Amino acid sequence: MSWTPKNIKDQSGKTFLITGANTGLGFQTALELAKKNALVIVAGRNEEKINQAIESIIQEIPTAKLEAGIVDLSDLKSVKSFAANVIKNHNRLDVLINNAGVMFPPASKTKDGFELQFGVNYMAHFALTSYLFELVNSTKDSRIVTLSSIAHKNGTIDFDNLRLEKPYDKFREYGQSKVADLIFTFELQRRLTTIGSNTISVGAHPGISKTELLRTDKPEMIDEFPHMSANQGAFSSLFAATETIEGGSYIGPNGDGEMTGFPAPAFIAEYAKDKLIGKNLWKYTNSELGLSFL
Ligand SMILES: NC(=O)c1ccc[n+]([C@@H]2O[C@H](COP(=O)([O-])OP(=O)(O)OC[C@H]3O[C@@H](n4cnc5c(N)ncnc54)[C@H](OP(=O)(O)O)[C@@H]3O)[C@@H](O)[C@H]2O)c1
Image (cartoon, rainbow, N blue to C red; front, side, top):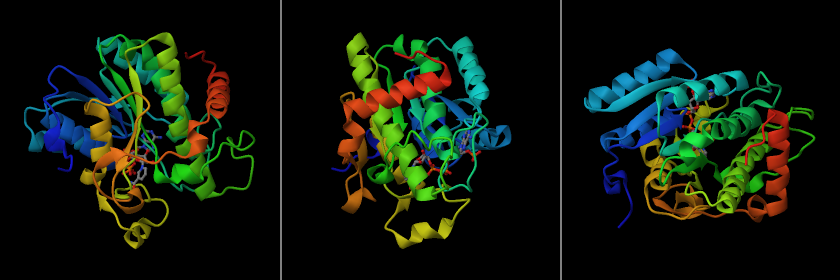
């Protein structure tokens, strides 16, 4: 039997935070969790879009427990103040879903000078995880879910090109950001194991799903590939967020080339599992962010 959100147990009493939850996979993830009585912090950079998303979930599920969270992941100051607000207003965080992302934007940088895809998809989520860690770690059986992609297979980390030092290559830079997300997932799990934490770190990818991800490039490109609805695309995240799985798992759809299908263990490139690369990326990130996370 294929896994669907119908399999999700009741999530009453649990708090989830999803970045990029106003549309696409993040929205569908919030919707399905709300159906299971979770409290969901619906986070995104645009207050109007976040409020609209909350409205449309409430129209479908009038009893939904939702809270708006405003955070611009292209600005590390915004990440820090958002996290401080979450900590002020919550005494538990069961699941942090590092979902928001950009793909193939025009060449540009975050406020802090990182190539936009690397900065938003990876650096900001490392920072957010770090700021929220005490809250997550003090919540029993908590987890951190980070979104990667099939594109991680083509990604490597070029420490001389994380701030757009080289001529922009949107494919290479997207792959770099998504392999960084997966390296982070595994390195985080290794560090959680070392400190004996009950929190786990897991990864997920949605195959190819019809969302707004290609809005600044060629949205019609998706039709050239087998693909799924945004709702089915969210199944991997939902599985990773709610099923009993081991730390360090990576979940994706089980069809041909992992482009479509139902949640199952996904292919992981050797590069993403490399412990030295994990250690180096972690060290670089802490140093660039002025943090000493784990
Ligand atoms: N769709 C796919 O086939 C696919 C495949 C592999 C991996 N993924 C991954 O899945 C994740 C979700 O993507 P999606 O497909 O659902 O794309 P999407 O429909 O474009 O949604 C992306 C979300 O991220 C938010 N976001 C972008 N930049 C942000 C910023 N600076 N600060 C805060 N939020 C920001 C967007 O907010 P706004 O609406 O305000 O811009 C939106 O809520 C991404 O990490 C992506 O890499 C998707």
